[in-house]
Length: 271
Image (tube, rainbow, N blue to C red; front, side):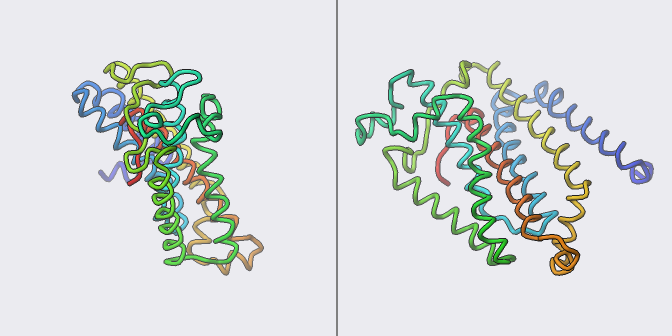
């Protein structure tokens, strides 16, 4: 144990990533059943959200209690594309026909039929919402519990919006019975394992990226803003911009986690 603590931090990090990769890519698939592996895939999606929270809250001191908003935006963007793909060209998703509230596909659904647009939206849409909210909040120097309350209010507003638009969002049920993933049948255990490996790879990649970001000059500046915002402002930096970057990056991670959650579980719905 003493040797590990005295080891070079870079080497220790590489060993940690190697051990994580060994567990996720070798031990877990060999030891867990298909059901347990699908559960692990679900939990790894939540771990991706936690990586973003670790950057924004753990490193930057931003009490982000509304990450479910960005998780949901990414999840719905992915689910909309997969439902349209399952329905086929020119057809509406099954739940729209079931509820009978619409005669044709809503115009704002149509772009999600394009896989490139849908994939970009899973990350860029949450980041855009976070940028808008963060710009309004941080430049007015709202922080602490007040920022947490605003983020929770945003989450509550999103839930009300999703539930109230049953004909286009599925209401309380959400978007369910997702069977395909870019041409692959999710009922096939082999394809479910493929989804698991994708999620595990994304998690490790984001961990590495976040570690580099934390150890960069920006990471040091983020800690400085957390510990003494007024001193950072006195040195000529804008703390609002520093916090905004962390908040937007964390939102993008949450959106990506939501997008991966959909094929792993086969459903996305309001909490």
